[in-house]
Length: 205
DNA sequence: AGCACGATTAACT
DNA sequence: GTTAATCGTGCTC
Image (cartoon, rainbow, N blue to C red):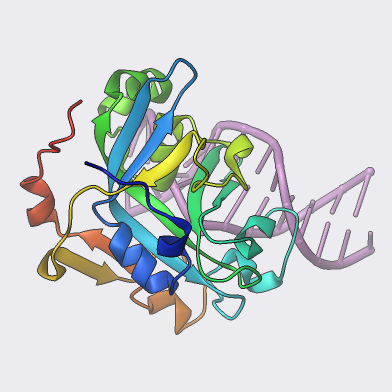
C-alpha cells in the first residue's frame, strides 16, 4: 500500500531527498477525484544561495520565496515565457533548497495528460520539467502549496525502490552559463535507462 | 518605464 | 545539429 511522503522525508539533506525521490510517485487529484500520477525518474538538487546554479543565488525575491519555506512545499516557477517547473522544497525552513522534478513515468491519468499536452504529447508525455507540469496541469497556483497536508491535491507517495546500482548521477541540465564548480556538480539523479526500460509500472493506468 | 534573460520545448535543416 | 516562441521577473535608468 502506498504511503504519503511526510515532511520528515523532505526535511533532510537535499541530495538525499533527490536520490530517494527516484521511484516515488507524484500524484495530482483533480476536482471530481480523478488521479493523474507518475513515477519520478529524474530529479535535480538545488542547494542554498552559495549554489550559483540555484535560483536562490541572488537572494530571496517574490519569485523564489517558496524555497525558503518549510520542507515539503512546492516551489513552482515560470520560465522562457511559457513553461512551468515544479520543485519540492527541502531542508530546514529559512534555508533555500529544493529538488526539481525533471521527468516522470506516467502511471495514472494518461488520457488527461494527453489532453493537456496536446499533439506534441505523443512524442513525450512527461519527460522534461515543463512537460510533466503541463501533463499534470501544474502552474502558478501550486507555488507554495503544502504537499504534505492531508488535504493536498498534489502530493508524493511511495512507489518503487531503486537500488543504488540503478541510479545514475551527473551534472545538472541547462546551467550552461553557471560557473564551475556548480555547473558540473553531480547533483542530477536519474534511473539508469536500462533499469527504466524494464519498468512497467505496477500501479495501473 | 525599459530591458535582457531564463533550472525549456517544439519544430525545423 | 539550430532556432523561434513568449513573458514574468529582477535589475537598471
